[in-house]
Image (cartoon, rainbow, N blue to C red; front, side):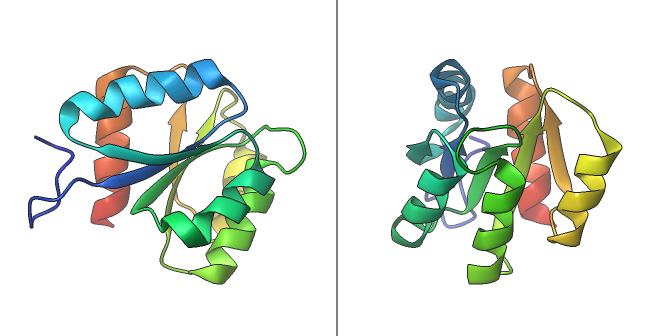
Length: 129
């Protein structure tokens, strides 16, 4: 199974997206591969509040959300832990968003809509680096 760490424990994922359907698609893509979705958030503010308690291995973070967008939330989380892995999800492949994310140390992106294998691959790539 691809979603397991070298010690055999599941890779822990927090799914952050304002669309419950997208969060469900993330879970459907990851769980059969052995990943564990340890938490979900519908906006960046919820993600920032959940993060210290969950301490996931990686966060899938939508860029465009109400209350607090994904870039703002990623910035706050990276201040709490500069090593936290974050995979930004966006329906728009906007170079400005990619450039802004890079200033927070975020280098990994996945376009929406995504295929399940694409999501798995992007997470594994983000965790390797």
